[in-house]
Every structure is written in structure tokens, then in C-alpha cells.
Amino acid sequence: MQYEPIAAIATPQGTGGIGVIRISGEGAFAVAQTVFRAESGKLLAEMSGYTASYGKVLDAGGVIDEAIALVFKTPKSYTGEDVVEFSCHGGETVLRRVLAAVFQAGARMADPGEFTKRAFLHGRMDLTEAEAVMQLIGAQNEDAARAALAQHEGALFYRVQEIKGILYQISAELAAYFDYPDDDIPALTPEAVVPRLEEAQDRLTALCDRYESGKVIRDGVAVAIVGKPNVGKSTLMNLMLGEERSIVTPVAGTTRDIVEESVWFAGATLRLFDTAGLRETEDVVEQIGVARAKEKLNHAALIFALFDGSRPLDAEDEALFSMLRGKRVLAILTKADLPQRCDGNRVRAAFSSVLSLSAAHGTGLDQLESGVRAALQLDNFDPRAAMLANARQLDCVVRAKAAIAECQKALSAGFTLDVLSVELQAASGALAELTGEQASEAVIEKVFAQFCVGK
Ligand SMILES: Nc1nc2c(ncn2[C@@H]2O[C@H](COP(=O)(O)OP(=O)(O)O)[C@@H](O)[C@H]2O)c(=O)[nH]1
Ligand SMILES: [Mg+2]
Picture 1 (cartoon, rainbow, N blue to C red):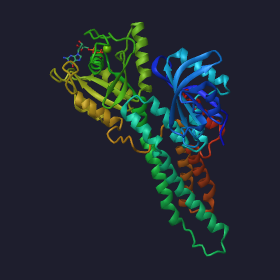
Picture 2 (picture 1 turned 120 degrees about the vertical axis):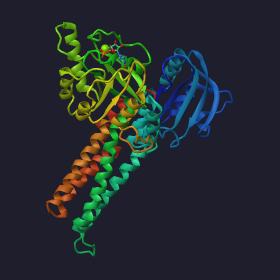
Picture 3 (picture 1 turned 90 degrees about the vertical axis):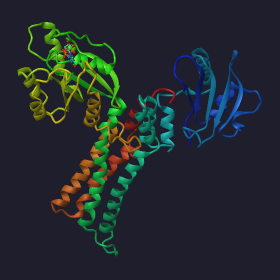
Picture 4 (picture 1 turned 30 degrees about the vertical axis):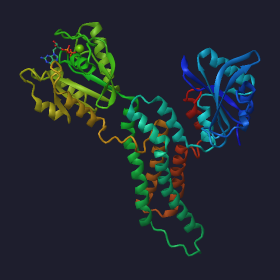
């Protein structure tokens, strides 16, 4: 079954060598034929799939453009439907006129993501593979692109199917055992079920554990550079950026507002926030800066806590120790080029990860890089591994895990196996929502609404 024909410009706005108009759905060939005359005289519907034809695009007023028409026949197309793609000249005016002619011929404007949605509805891809399309398009770096491609090719889908398989198998055995007690079905024991539940739970946990590093690779991560005035925050920020972005002076309180800049460092995009030095101050502007710095502390995924290596620790440094408790912190002793007077052991006692560098001389950046990689768990990042790509997917896995945990709790409390079936169903239901097999219309709408038009 095919849906009504839709059309959209599939290439980005602006001018380019080529612009593509895509038409998909029942009657796509008839719609396209209305506006296209092949030089060869051949009709689009008579062409084989995956073939191209050169010709003219026209509307009632005459020829609009020359184009190549590419023909795809159901089910062998992106959407699974009959598809025609016109490769036109890539000017906005030309493309808009061609699209208008296509609408005139009977197609309607495609909604955002509607081509991919149709691919999903026709079983060309599951929901995770569809979501990966958007991530591939939006990938900001190579690892993110590799990871998106792996998910598009089904890395997550197949992993989830395996886990779902474990749960279905247990459910099936339970059903057989309880529904047909008279048959010769061997007794199912908790001992046989427990390790399988554990296996499913472990695999889901592994997915959750990788979620954050995947997010870091994809979206980058907010890093707040904090410390009392004059420890060298702005100097470090500038060093990492390779430019004099933040003003550096020997005057304490130079940086008053937050200076934000992104940098590619240690294999991830870091959104660096250089903040006002944390101290008590009478200066009203600086007070606001300090308040903002404190606020950033709570929102940053990683904190560079700077301590002046050339001076003894003081009460302001100590205040930072307690302010940062429980947060993910890289403690940095600065000004390593000067004689060191800071009690490094006290800093090491307060933070698990401590390194020393000279931002003025640019030494110690290697350790900073490995420190960042360790803190963000980037070293084990495998872009080809099954990976959860967004909050929706994570939420499904979390619900599945909670349901499996209920099963495990019931068994360890000594309940009999018949209590498991509801929670098992909840767990596999959550996973079926993840892949889209059992996702509600609302969920599916929401997924594709985030797409761009033409995809
Ligand atoms: N010798 C030396 N001086 C530094 C270093 N980093 C910063 N400074 C100096 O320390 C002062 C304060 O630096 P700044 O980056 O403005 O500190 P902030 O207040 O924490 O942003 C400036 O005079 C810098 O030149 C360093 O690695 N070595
Ligand atoms: Mg500063």
C-alpha cells in the first residue's frame, strides 16, 4: 500500500549546482509525468527502477528548467513507494517553480520527516534507524557521523531485538508451562530464569552506560572553568581556543561576565565557559558575574577547578572544595612554570583527578587532554557500537530495566514464576516502543516532527 503523493525540495535552501525535488507515493509517476518531458520521449512509468532520464520540466506557462529525472519503483526506494527525483538547477526560484508545478499536478507538500516516516511505516527501517538519519545529517564531527551511520544500519535495533528475544523466550516458556500444565513441558525453574534476566539487564545497563559518552560526542559538552580570581582561568581558556578571547590582566576581577566559546579538544566539542573568579566582592557587576559562575557550576557536565600553583591555598580555594563536592571535576594546578607553593596533596585529597599545567607556556595540555578523555569516558568510545541516540530511547530502556528489576526482585523474594508475566510484558513493550514496533501514533509523530522538510 502506498500513501498519497507528497513532494518537497530535498536539498538545502540557498543556491547550489543542483537542487533535488523528491516526489513519493501512489501516483508519483503520473504527478511527475505531468511536469516532465523526456528528451527520449520515454514515459517515467515505463522506465525501470534506478534509471535516469534527461528532459525538461514545464508548467502551464512553458519550460521552467532542464532536469534529470531519477526513477525508483516500489518497494525499492528510500520510502518504499514509487519515487521520482528531479535533479534541477540549484537556484531557489527555479526549485520553487518546479515544486509549485508538482503541487499543481497533484502532490501535496511533505511534512517534516515525512519521507523517512513513510520508510518507517513501510518497514524499510525501524524507529531507531529512522532517528539515526537525522543524526547523520546533523553530525558535527566524524565520530558522531560514524555512530549515526552504525545506528542507521541497525546496530541498536539488532541489539534491542536480541534483548527482546531473551524476554520473549522467557514469556513463551512461562506461558507454555502455565497454560498447558498437562503436556510434557519440562518444569521451568527460577534458577533457569534468573541468569537470563540478568543477561538482559546487563545488556540494557551497557546501553545506558554508553549513553552519556555518545551524547558528548554528538552534542558536545559544557565545561565550566572556575576558581578564585587570578588563578589563570582566562589564560587557560585562551590557550585552548588558540586566540585571545578572554581579557587577561594581573588585576583580580577582570572577567566579570561569562565568556563562552566552543573548541574541539580531546576528541569532543567542549563548550568552554570562562567565569568570573569566585570571591566575595563589593563590586555590583562582579557580584552578578560570581552568581552566574556559581550557576554554571550546576549546569556544566565537567568542571575545570583551577588553583594557583604558585601560591598557598587560601580560604577562597577551600570554599571551592566544598562547593564542588559530588561534581565531575578536573582539578588543575596552574602556573607550573613558577615555583610551586600550593599544597598539591590537599588538592589531591579533595579531588580524584588533579593535574598541573602552565597556560602561559602551554605545557601540560597533554595531561589535560587525557584528563578530559577519562572524565568523559571517551577512550572506550566505539562509534560502531549499539548506542542510544536520544532521551526517548533512553527512557524506553530505563522503563524496560525497571520492569526487569521488578522480576528479579520478585524471584529473589521467593515468589513463583507466574508473577513475572506482567512485568516481562512491560519490559518487552518498552523495548518494542523503542524500535517503533509498538509505538503510539503520538510517539511516532513526535519523532518525525523533529526532522527537516525534504528528509
Ligand atoms: N607565570 C604564569 N602566569 C600566568 C599563567 N596563567 C596566567 N598567568 C597570569 O596570571 C594573571 C591572571 O591570569 P588570568 O588568566 O586573567 O586569571 P583569571 O582571573 O583566573 O582569569 C595574569 O597576569 C596572567 O598573565 C601561567 O601559566 N604562568
Ligand atoms: Mg578571567
